[in-house]
Length: 149
Image (cartoon, rainbow, N blue to C red; front, side, top):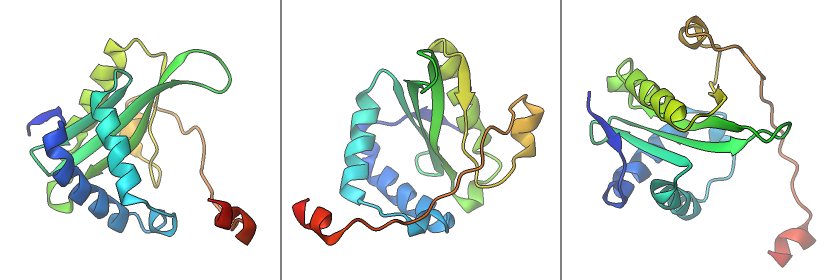
């Protein structure tokens, strides 16, 4: 499968893939989504030195990663933000992960993080350890705060 960095011309495909990603991740559908804001994030990430946006076979999947410091130490870490493959291409999207790992190595990061909706034995076989289990709770803002926005 062909994997390449996304370009601005790919934004319509990334928009479709993002919608499919959200539809496949039922818990994520509970979180607010501002499509225009997300497309701005992707557009900026395409241009960024410390961000990565990859496309799989022109629309079979995509990957978004970013480098940041940890909250605990000023060392560079690579963070997977979105890793999605359409259902009919599942199993072929691992190339996106391998490209992410090459990018992280080129960027000389000390740690690589991936977020999965459930345990992933394939990542554990590659030496990854479970770091956290995420939870979220909706805590609505007061009407006054919303009105001020």
